[in-house]
Length: 236
Image 1 (cartoon, rainbow, N blue to C red):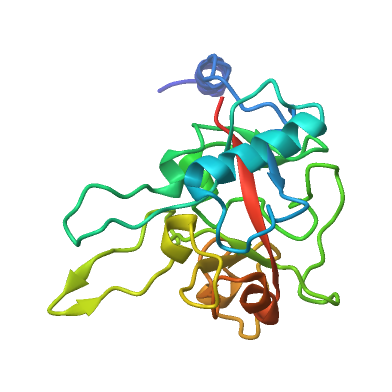
Image 2: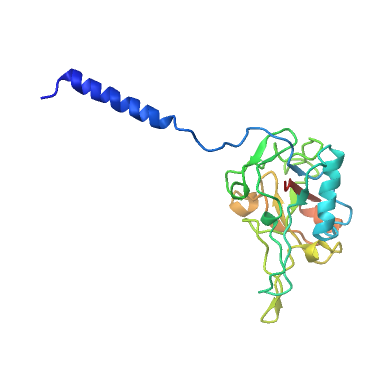
């Protein structure tokens, strides 16, 4: 029969072994703070949903970042485009344009570690963190005028909507003509940076895919609570 001392010794050895395993080196961790790599634009380029295509939207992000002292990085607008036909590969997913992360706001607050986290419930996009490039808060749904709508043209997972025509019926425009239309016609999908809406359901609280505009001019973008703003991410 084993003695009590023997049992105690065995337990001590086991505990030491477990402790030794728990101190094994772990993988790299994401820094708690970092340089600005995400912001909500302080303005629209001036033509509503006509951003000059993806290239014009990217230039807008780059210009605002440059003015804020962060022009040494490559900035991309978080926007998707639709293809000319259902099976056409000529579309762009917003999630594929913005690099791999991590992303931080102007105050160094972590927004998301990577693309997967950005498109999950774990992202840190909200009314306190979605600041513009100058570090200013943007009017959320509780403020007047509300500017909580953000142009994205994207589905919740950051991918593009279908485009083209099927059985004689066109898919709805969700990108203001791939960001070239600033008229009353067309529409663009919006997100709510404050994750707030009229109903406590996922689509109403989505940061990137809540509801479409009622047109593509600024006069048709504003009535639902927007100001034609964009999300900008540093892709490198």
